Image 1 (tube, rainbow, N blue to C red):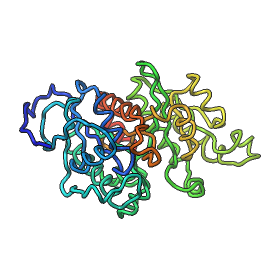
Image 2 (cartoon, rainbow, N blue to C red; image 1 turned 120 degrees about the horizontal axis):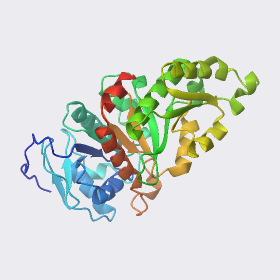
Image 3 (tube, rainbow, N blue to C red; image 1 turned 60 degrees about the vertical axis):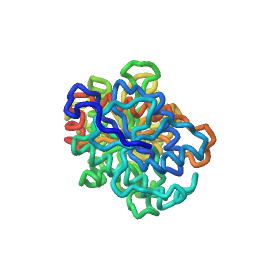
Image 4 (tube, one colour; image 1 turned 180 degrees about the vertical axis):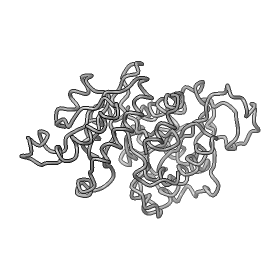
Length: 364
């Protein structure tokens, strides 16, 4: 590891944007997919940096049989371009970690703390203008809690890092088109990381409207046009006129009416069992799902390893892989970096979208 002095003018506005990568929980496949994505990244589009303890990262990759490029520690304001030949790492203050404290494929407080500290530092850098976007690897929620972080996941951790309530942020699962076209499918959830019972109790027209507004702004930035949005029904068959529940008439339909009155191309409530078939066929660009699994299951079935997690509602650009820490495949050479590459591409598309961060934050 070495620390080189800056090689380029830090005030060069023509330079590619700085994009920060975090590995998530080091005990999982995060370090592996970050290293693999780094080797395949389009470094001409961005100046990538990994936010991590350099010694820990090098040790993790080495013991798993990886031969990464040399790990080079750089300052947060180092303007040099990134390249496949060396892994540029920014070490957050106080991030030094004993590599032996985080065993592979094991839940630990040290792993949760390492993941959270990297995200918090990256979010602060993005908020201060030192980075244009952050792209995060998967963390483990039990490890996060073991480290004393009482948050359900990245979305809420980022909201608090921005000094905002948990509900200020929404997760959008984005499934890019398989070709280079701007198409794709986005899903935002009205409720997210909580028990199904709590989600049903907390579901409201206001939450559905907030999810629809954030979905609209996120997709408009990615697609370059106003999106067509469908709102899922809660009950089987859309409630069958009240036979299977009244939430469609009492909550969902009024929310759709408010979205339409605001000028959004919103339709619903539509039965969830056929809604995604219609969306994949091209009828809709995005779906408002009412609880976690209603949106996650179809997106992950359609393309788990190319789906992207995008945080909406915050004054920064953050994307992530849509899969978990993969403890069962750690060090086995089976980790798929395509989701990380897709997240890096989505981050750069959002950075280039005029007013995305301001529009996203205005929907909070």
